[in-house]
Image 1 (cartoon, rainbow, N blue to C red):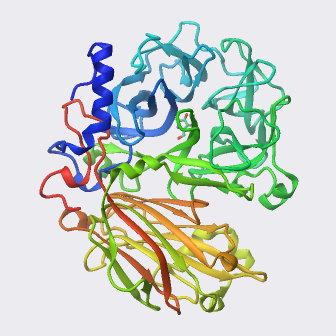
Image 2 (cartoon, rainbow, N blue to C red):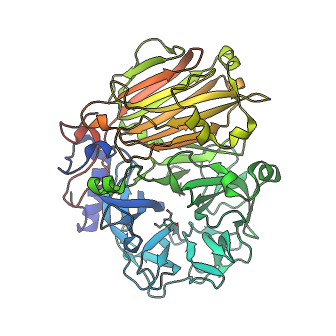
Image 3 (cartoon, helix red, strand yellow):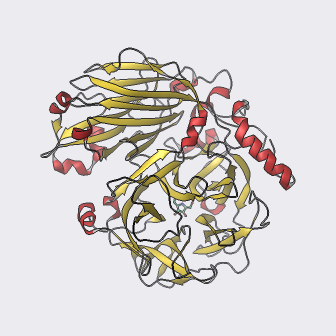
Length: 597
Ligand code: DQQ
């Protein structure tokens, strides 16, 4: 379906119709697609490399997602970085448009890097992005819709007066990038935050402007870390102290509102955040004293993780239509460059997540947006009793295609099982990845491991385990969540780490722990404790090319574990971006008889 070049009115109707209704009409896959790894409901362009989500916005009834895109190949190539652009009516089905930005001007000749969209008071959106100029300096540029009446924002103009912000004298020219969505202060001035290395220190800086064109750097950084050289892709957003609703970026600090500062650490490709207080007069962000101590002061690496797995460069936006805050993030590949070239693509976006503040006020809750339910088709059933036997128990969840599924299970932990929990040396609690690597899914324990085996071959030779292990502390208990990838693929050259993170819940009081996992061919996104700990992993099971995948509950603890809730759904394949050849290269069911669900 060619979407570019239609008259506007016809185009808008066609896009809306297409996005809402097309998921029921099976598209065809390109003959050369490597079907098994392509996803069925995660966002991907039809082909080539993508990385960071850029400028997500809800505008005039349509969701827009821009993303870092190399239109010329499946590998990272900074000089070619463009802004890919897709639109959606429901955050699930997407139509591809032409690139919004390409590196064509002196102020972005070496790449259009990351940035954000802000809606101005007259209702018009503006892009602010980091261009890499002809001298390889990172500068900040604006772009405006070419036709303000085009609801789809198909073409963007880069004014000749760019850059609006050149590199300041004390900032390193190759470390000045990734402007956030701007917010309006009570004094009527716009602000945005940006990553920089200023005077040799990694900092998140704030600029102010009365007209969005002339910007002045605030003397104090929003936040700085002595320990981090550069923290990129900052995001500062307000959260309500109570409830699950989201707030617009310009909701100022005050009663009932806190702020979250998130940064991305390039050395480890990990995203960290802290809930704190934003001072809207000084434009500084402070971590509450008690959390500052617990979290290790300004060292981002001791802040909370957005996701304990394979996920980076996250960015949120306020969805005015549903009054919620939604998070997107880049999920990189874990296979080899040669595999990516053979596939013809690289990189996914996480499934969009609604984000809000936990009632305790210290951590975020993340949950797949409710629109995922429009993809639910067949319901899975637990084969056998609602209990998973001790030391080797395995129960299959049957009746569904297990390679594109949404599974939620609640495990009930009896006090008896807790009594068997092993003691955790407090020194070891700083490295959950190492704990999970040492005590994988096959290592039997007192109160765990128990959880899910996903993307499992019939003989279990390949499987990915997402599981919990409860440990005893000097006071109370703690729950470790792991994703064990060691058996996830027999393919050579695949990175198969163990991901780990603690789940901040009171297991002794709750006596239950929940796990929701989205399985989509080569990605496994998990949400524990109702979304308080998230863990994303990439998997490349070889069996999926020739046979179906299975889904199990397992238990390698000393006592049996009761399943008090199970909701497992097979998901339909969404319409995610149409290729130039008019074909949709989605994974799964509709990619031909040789592909197995
Ligand atoms: N990727 C972008 C940068 C950002 C980094 C360029 C994070 O702007 O700092 O593609 O992945």
